[in-house]
Length: 302
Image (cartoon, rainbow, N blue to C red; front, side, top):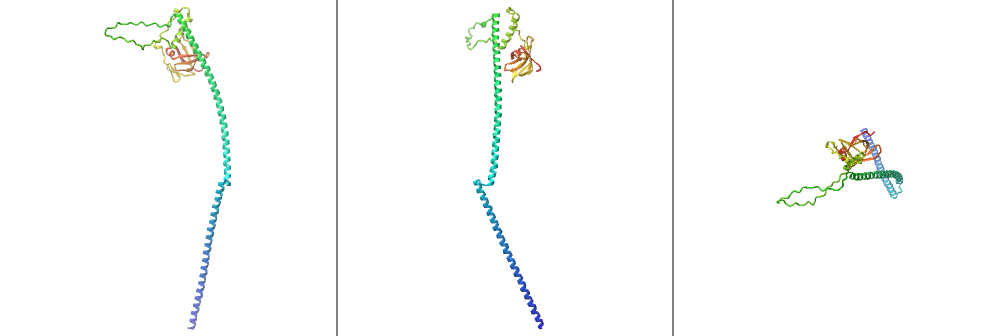
């Protein structure tokens, strides 16, 4: 019995020792966990503080750069401004060169156009003078031929009154009222008719100038001898064909003479042709073409 109880006491003491040692280990582990938690918390506080410090440093740096930018002393700003200034100067230089080139081109074109205008003016002036001289010479010849014709035929420009037959008025007829609006008739011929008559007279005078009684009367033209001739948009429509300026033609007259010509201009009621033989100009009216006084034929430019 004694031994048994002693064994139980020893076992109890062993169990107590084990419990104390286990509690001791638990307390040590708890202490280590607490110290690790404190260390982690301290590290987190340090990280937050460092992060805050970095934010403040960056913010201060940005504010300092902003201040330098406003003052114009920021290095990056000065570097980019220098590059922009170089580009600006280069663009101005290119613009000045372009302006110089364009100015020279405009001056050259101005001188060229001025010379062309002066030349065209001189040519037009000479052409106008020649045309006026030709017209005056033609009118002079017309007047001289008209005077000679009157001398040869003995006609005068006096207009003879037309004899009219008056009927006897009946008693019930109203009294006739004289017409005050009646105007004298115009007996003047057109330029085309005068030119045609003068040509006929000149031919007769060359044959027998001393015998005016042999002057033939102007032949009457039949409707079959008329040609279709008109001018539209600067072109001549004649005998179902179109003719334009600078076109080579043959001009045939009533005396069967054939002249090689070139159309120099097309007017509103006439055309001007230039002879290829002596470069003299002639004016042909539409009426002359319609009556067949002149006939136009095409020819090759060669």
